[in-house]
Amino acid sequence: MSTLLAGAWGRVRSLLPARADFAVMSRNPRRDLLAGLTVAIVALPLALGFGVSSGLGAEAGLATAVVAGALAALFGGSNLQVSGPTGAMTVVLVPIVARYGPGGVLTVGLIAGVMLILLAVARAGRYMQYVPAPVVEGFTLGIACVIGLQQIPNALGVAKPEGDKVLVVAWRAIETFVGHPNWTAVGLAVGVAVVMLAGARWRPGIPFSIVAVIAATVVALVFSLDAAAPIGALPSGLPAPSLSFLDPAALGSLVAPAVAVAALAALESLLSASVADGMTVGQKHDPDKELFGQGLANLAAPLFGGVPATGAIARTAVNVRSGAGSRLAALVHAAVLAVIVFAAAPLVSRIPLAALAGVLLATAIRMVEVGSLRAMTRATRSDAVVLVLTAVATLALDLVYAVIIGLLVAGALALRAVAKQARMDQVDFRPDLPGEHSDEEHALLAEHIVAYRLDGPLFFAGAHRFLLELSEVADVRVVILRMSRVTTIDATGALVLRDAVEKLNRRGIIVLASGIRPGQRQVLESVGVLELLRREGREYPTTPEAIEGARAHVQRAGLLPAPAQRRTLNTVITEETSR
Image (cartoon, rainbow, N blue to C red; front, side, top):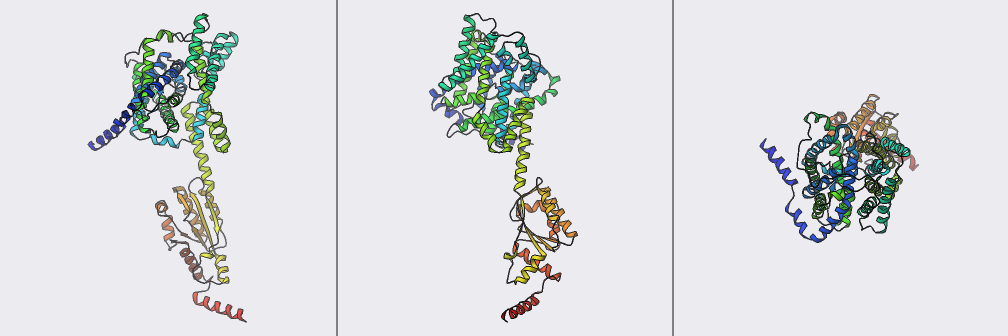
């Protein structure tokens, strides 16, 4: 027991920040400070918008950006990651808010935090590399569509209709708008989105999101646009930590939503960290430490009224492009947002909801990489199917189900492609015959012996084809299976092989095998294939030895002359030829 505890503690210690992680922060602090300030300016409207979209209010988004952003930066596995509320997480939270209320969301965040820490201790971060690119692209496209649809009520200036299905809510909002149009809200939302999109193409380094939001707020205040509803009063500071939202009676029913939140937090955070690595030279994140940092962030954020957080791809990209070189930039981002919460809450509370809707609409549009989608859909038909199916599932179901469906379909299509690579070809064994043989003997051997070469994997996805092909062998006495090119065998493949050997044996056809690899012997032994082959010495290390064994069997059956007879036959042939 003590050994287990010591091992667990050693694993946890390996996840804690090392001195080298903080030593990097002193290399170029000025550059990191400027990068952190830039990210904070970009993150402010996003944090407010995602807080509003989640249903818990703008203050929840700010609290998440400050608390989760700081803890994930300190304890995470990436020097460049910026964490906080994200659109993808908002998509998952909306139905949870509708069903369980704000307390349910905060409880889900705590449970998800514990799950993320357990995943880190179990070293699950490395499995992110197995998520196929079409699943990620489809997932991102689906999230972008959902985020855009979520903004329809605020962009149209109508109250959010009841419901947790984004398509239904958006349609009801449009119906309400048609009856009572609010063109002021539409103008602010469209104006902010256009400024952000056009500005990003004109001057990518300028944070046009904050510029557009400030301009929309000033217009709404100066012209007293009553139709431009503000986000509402914000607390001047973070609330004191509290567990009052916990409802022990509801914990059991919240486990499933917490699994969804934890899965999304892990997926999005590790994906964002990988994107950051790809944008730089010499940076490489630790996936398990990143999960640990996100787990601590999600444990703490609910205590201060925040929502579950993840690594944010957009803010992380801004951080990298701004020249960040250490986690100091992400810490500065959280500190600046904290100052805004304490010092500028009254001003922030006057920002129109329509302006924040415009920010998120532009963000959703910028999430869609048209070139990448076009390339992915043109790559192979399977990639296109996985991408489209994942995107549709994200829109129609939820994000976790979408990823699961995408992974299952991608896995099934990949297995199908691998299974098609497996072949069983009949080969000419006569060049491998040892010794001297006459043309007549070659003909006799070819009449009674057939050799097949197995190439590729022999596993459940394609093994039954071999059973059918082998079972249809006729008019021979010996079948030689050359197995040196078999890449892998699973239990299904071994069972199919055993069934084929037994069926041929019942028809009086013996089966010889050659070149079985050492790594494949265990599975063949476990289902009895090797025992079946060894019963009469029918397994051989090399193909020439197997051919010699087949020739000996044909001789014993009287279908081929014995060695002495063969010499006589050869002599007769020679004499006849010399005449």
